[in-house]
Length: 427
Image (cartoon, rainbow, N blue to C red; front, side, top):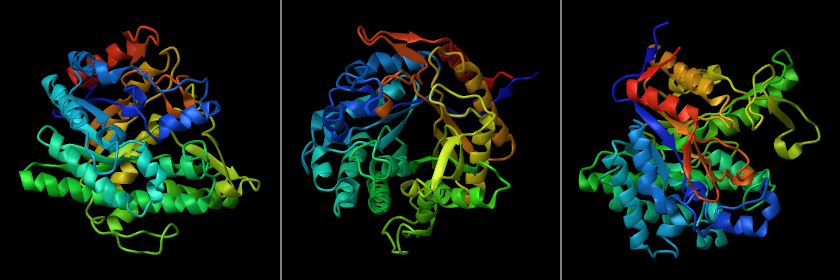
């Protein structure tokens, strides 16, 4: 069969996040892990992580040598602004050099400004729900764009806002460990305002310098499908969480106001028109059925889609779900799409080669359908600290020896390198 070809200029590479790889960070997550070690599967922390903060030049050179032409990384707010209004110029210079190092190695930098973590001073004043969080975020974003903007076109304001709100404020498995639907809605409203303020800051600073800027969030699309599609109960139970998780934030951005049931339609300055592309994080879909014992989860029981192979996280593997997600999002929002995360946890690299072929194949199919997909960033380059899962879930193309920090390419890393080199996805 003829291999399917990706377009010239299509972005291909990996995605990472500062807290998961850098080490040496003092933020809300590091304090959470220190205070709640039992919350991390298998123990462990990100005190050292994979030491990427010191090793970034070698790491990025390695990815560039394997023909990646893009790389997504995040800036750690707690490093850049350790106290409100005080910017660490060494930290800003570091991240500016990360962006330049990407370019020196032939990779387009895609930069995330807030990837789950918060400085301690913002945590202590209310985190995402703090009244001044949007203004504080805008100030930080403006400083980052001033420092990095000559090397960066693609920006992500906030990574997976619905995920961080749900896990931190509804399920309580992430900081601040709350279990409150009211507080979840408050966090979502705060994150929406932060995104709007951050997007305005990017546009303002970029325009002042005559620099192009592409702006989005990294939207986590995990569709909630009725466990029994013929059951009106399952369909009803799936409808609200699916809307809240997969559509509320994006539709609020388009409308320029805080849509219900999270808000009452209040307008947010800078929100309308704040997305110039759509960053898509996609891993799986879930089946939903009634659970009358779970009012905090909107009476919904979530499970892996039946009949699908499972990753080591227990998530269903379905390349068709990625294709449907791309298609549905493009049909509704008509924005160019960059897949900012897609990956599989796989202890022995047995699933990942087929996963890459099938999911990149699904991307090629959507492009053939006329959908404007600009890039695919695999999660992730190296096995790293996976939040509450610690080091038990291995998403990386490279394994990392926790003692020596040696990076060891897996077979899937070489397959991905060949796809990057040839722009062809084998059938």
